[in-house]
Length: 286
Image (cartoon, rainbow, N blue to C red; front, top):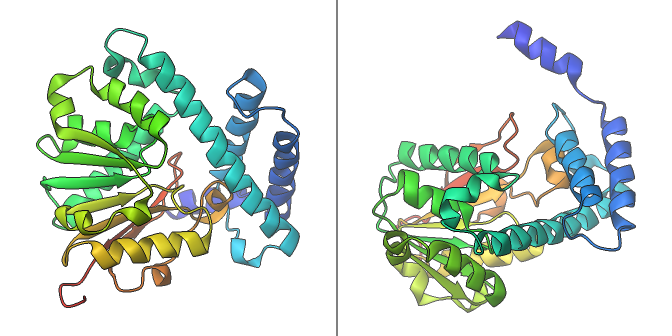
């Protein structure tokens, strides 16, 4: 183990070089006429992701003001590009026979499988086994996490997927609608999460997607709203980012989850991008 750790340290990219390379990619992406999937767009984002999952000890809080602004811009751009990629692929899927059998054609499908496996393991280790009802906030046109969890892990759980975009939900419904059994356990709601209130009490576990709440202020506002209305003893699973991965997604720190008991924080070191933060609403809090 020691030799492996030393090897990782030797291959770590320096903070200065990492920021310089990411800044260069940000510049190239910013000049694109469109973020829709194309050979150039796919190449730039693939390069960016590979760069951000390399071993690194970077602390994003110590970045210069200029680098911080670049990071904020990059997260927004990545979110838009991810949405366009998912929408294009989902639109393709609903035109083929058995779309659920072709999910693995999605470029990042393997990443979602690993992340879902990880999240299911973390839930199980913390006593959450086969919850009756789960909410996924920010499901998008390709609700891969819900589909993977429902078909491979939580086979009797009912999933309510929330997204603010009706077009995204319409496509997602058609993908899931190709399987009558799955369709019975999976619904899609179009609304702003801040408008959902008492219904949050129905869920044993609530997932918050990484791109719901793009800034720290927005994220904390949403987390506070969910905490207020979810049931006591309920579980919140929040996707975050750590180290260089924080150039791709917003970061949720332990002290951002006020009013929750932190159960687990996991930071991946492989090609999984998102960190996982698991928390419970204590039963004595109102």
